[in-house]
Structures are given as C-alpha cells and as structure tokens.
Image 1 (cartoon, rainbow, N blue to C red):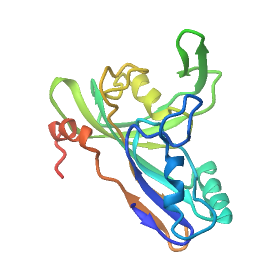
Image 2 (image 1 turned 30 degrees about the horizontal axis):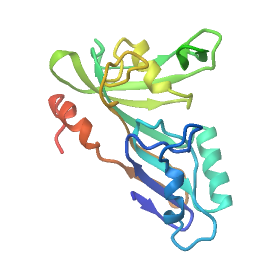
Image 3 (image 1 turned 60 degrees about the horizontal axis):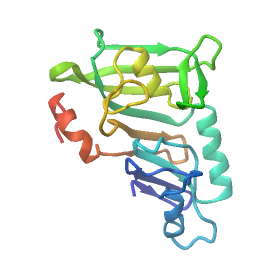
Length: 212
C-alpha cells in the first residue's frame, strides 16, 4: 500500500498479477478487492490499467465519485505517470520523445498486439537515459503523454531498444523489466506515490548505475 485516504488507494502491484480476471481465469487483483475495502461497503475499483507483467503504482477509487474523478484525470492526461524500464540496446541520444501512432493488430496464430501505423491513434512518450550498463543495457525514465495500450513497450521497440524480458516486442525471454515508478494526481491536496523496483529488476538496474 503506497497511499490510502477516504477516496483513493494506490497500490504497488506486483509483476505477474493481472488487474482484471481474464477469460482463462487465474489470479487477479479482483480476488483481493474485498480485503482492500477497509470498512467501506463498496469495493474499490481500478481507475486505470497496468499490464499483468508491469509492476508498480496502480490507482483505485474507493467511492463512485472518486472513481469518476480519477477516470477523468487519466482520460484527460492529468494523471502524471512516470515509468522506469531496462532496455536492450540503449538509444544513442540521452533524451528525446517518440511520437508514433499505434493500431491494434491480430491474427488467429499470434493473437493481438499493438503496432506503429500512420492510420493508428496518436501516441507520444518522452524518455531520458538515467544510466547505462554492459552489453547494451540502458535504464530509461519514460513519461507517456498519451495512454494507449502497450504504448511504452511499443515505443521502446520503435526506438530500437525493446524492454528487457518483453517477448512480444523483441526484448527476449525472462521477466519484463518495466515499473510504473510514480504517479501524481491533481487532487486537493495533491497525491503522489512512488514504487520501488521489484526484485527481478534490481540486478539489471544496478548494472546500469541504480543504487537503492
């Protein structure tokens, strides 16, 4: 638990836990919602989504008005999100912005994925290098300007440096090295929360200069 008040919860979601139950079943955050009610009759509900394999800050609304307000923040881009990623083949520059439209694709054999396509929806992600490691590893801070599905993962791959452990977009096998590092909400008073890197990311981050 990173933050709790009468209207909002912010959790440090572990990698590997889905936010919503899928058609194939399996554990999800929904299994834990009754324990997160903390005396309220209404169960808290996520105000946005994180991929199952992404760790870090997840915001839930504890009341119907709070959930509507939070949903507006995310829809309008007023929730300030920062991510950390370890990528393979760091960018040559130290900072920049990816602006590449995204479109959903699918096939019966491969399922669905997001692809860069001029006919897709606008998507932009600012990035900067926080550290570099051996064998082309780099530690990036990423700030999404929009909130498209898989946006950061696709934009990193489009930049030429897929996220370590992202098999869908070229990062290879293993666990995905993507963390929803912090979130800032323009509430009154403002709310901000920060998540620490999960255990599976720490070795690669340390190789790139991160220190706990």
